[in-house]
Image (cartoon, rainbow, N blue to C red; front, side, top):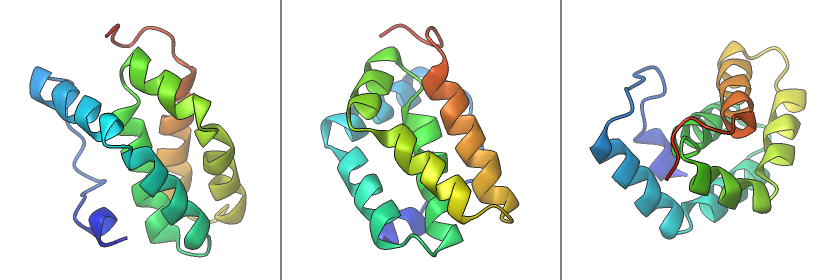
Length: 110
């Protein structure tokens, strides 16, 4: 969970080659399993849920990464987070952004 605290969800960045490479490395390292574990183990923490949704949003910007995340059932974890933190704008914002990105079929084909 300390990994999430090193992230800055309010500093959005553009899609550039180095970010695509970083996202692919994160997926290859199975960081998605760490995200799911954090979301499950810290359901009551809106901070962890915010960081998790933000991270999902960022790493799901390629088709390959979206497929891997969806195969792990990430959407249900995001929706659960939204249900548990209805009154937390940051959770709702990043969860919606993550779901919208996961539902998109052609942000970047890689």
